[in-house]
Image: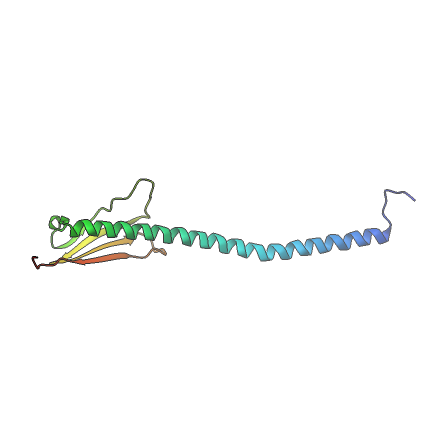
Length: 131
């Protein structure tokens, strides 16, 4: 008998092990692929929420400048407003505007496309009382 040729029983045993290996890998891939998709989705959502937080902080800062006296630059009604962003931060496409209604101010940022960011809006009312 040739030592390099397997007997039918050995070949059958190797075939069974190979089939178990293929089935095991298929089951593993079936479990890991949805998990990988979930991780990618969560990472994307975390990036969007991080941008929302940065935008909200920027809008809060701009509203503080408005409250400190810059409010005098704006007319009644809707005014276009440019939000200054720090170097390295690329905000999502959107538009910002300031709505002045007498002594009430509303600073709004709206995304161009519907995303998880949603609209960010901050309000401030100027006190007409003098200290």
